[in-house]
Image (cartoon, rainbow, N blue to C red; front, side, top):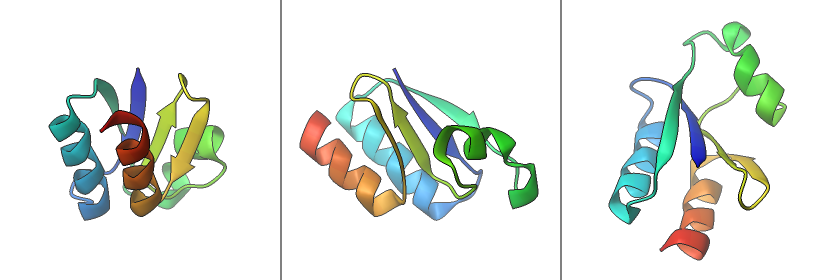
Length: 78
């Protein structure tokens, strides 16, 4: 199953979540703190504190930046 680290109200996060829903891909939504300094879980999995971050264990991929994530989803799940 995929994990999507996201911030409530983040338009980039919502775009990725919407695309996952459109593709019918099961994923776990992991809500993160608004303050960058409190995003230790995101830092642990991705090496940085920005969101969205997608973790796909099946492909061995952890990536940030919505455009890259959308390209990955199109290539592997569309």
